[in-house]
Image 1 (cartoon, rainbow over the protein chains, first blue to last red):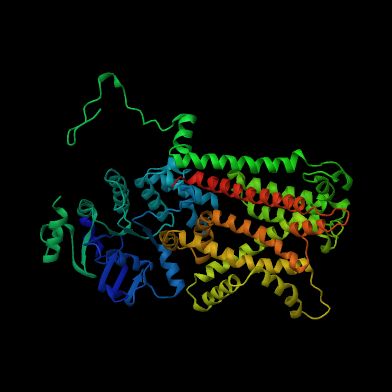
Image 2: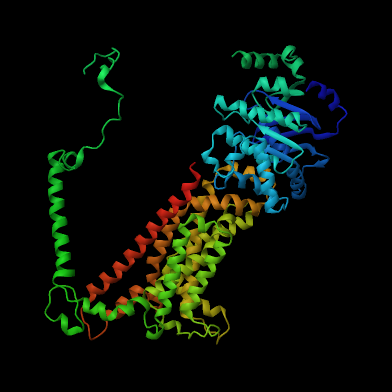
Length: 255
Length: 374
């Protein structure tokens, strides 16, 4: 994907964060975050727990509200304006650590729901779309089951299909493999790899360094609410600039 | 096989075969010995309890069956020691429908059948998931109500509501009360969790006010104060007034039940719905409420049962529900001193109704869970 990185410079900016700050009470979760993500770019965010990675990507579709600074998604600024939030959420898909599938709906209905209600797609078209996407993530045969009957890896793939059903231009992944048993991580990462190859703009919070090395155009290391380092995977792993990055890498790559 | 501490367990002998689970059942005799006669205190308690149960059961059977009279007319009860079921035999229409015209009694019966059939349909997952089922159910309830009330459009006579009574009135007040107050309670519960302070304050105030006042007070208020708000000459039906009081009351209690369910739905569900771009009402209607209402099936049944029994308070404002009719029947000069029979019969009906609702809710809960297997 590194060939992409050069090309990415020519691509339009999809997400732009300018001096974004956020507090939880007295605790500052994000400090002066500046970040630009271009079309088709895959950005991996890593860092120790509590470093603000999740908060950062949850601000991009306003699951969390930033308090200072500006966030633009495809040129639309995220403010309290519900219209803007609505526009942005249509363009941004999200995958959660805990899947958050709707347990009372069948797999297929989980995927069809948003296209029907948000994009007003006719039922039949939505069903076709859902089956296509389930095929793409490799679990079309589970369409009529309930989420509770699937394994964690399968559930997460349904969650990816559900997010893709809105045909988003950007996908956010919030630790998509952290809640999975080790033998199921690969099947989810494979789907994400395919997605990256297809040219999706992606921001992933993950600890999967192998995935980051292989797929990311850029790796961002965060600590204590700040972006400490941002670099290409090669440089990031081979020549980390900051002491904190080195320490983090030594801890995470030991095993 | 005794093993010394620290020593590893010896291998089972080669002919032992695969190890089965430990046997839990001891057989009936073993169970009795273990649980009923385990210690001498247990044995004593068992003996005393069996003796008590025997005495009570025997007395009840003797009174209700062996020495009872089932024949017709007050004369048949002269000099008998047991229950005088002749009284119930003559009075039971009063218990069922009050003074509803005899020629029209089939109407409440059909209404009851409709309600029972709707309940049965609700238990069937395939029927329930047919689109428009809930709308159809609502229409069914409405039809059942119109059948009892009568309508000039349908060419059904309209018996005065003062003639409604007995079990029919009890069920009517309860079912209409729950059905009408349920939507209100959902709005109240959502309002109570709203981010808008004025809406939240109003909902909290309403819920706490109603819950802080006994139903009897509400019934009085509805009966005597409601008419004051309307121009004189505008007469308000007595049953309707009590019904309003009951709706106000049950809305507050149901709201708290629903709120409990809302709190039981994982936060991630709302986040996922938000991330997909669903609006607030879509999120609530499609994602949060269906899950919340499943959680609250048992407490919902509890509220239903409580309300069913609480409606007996309408006797205070001059209506004759099941219990009111029992009192009414007892006052008949032809049948004096039939208190026990009247209350036993009314109690039995309450018992059947309440355990029916409770069994219904258990099955409903199980059916809802069956598909999801979380």
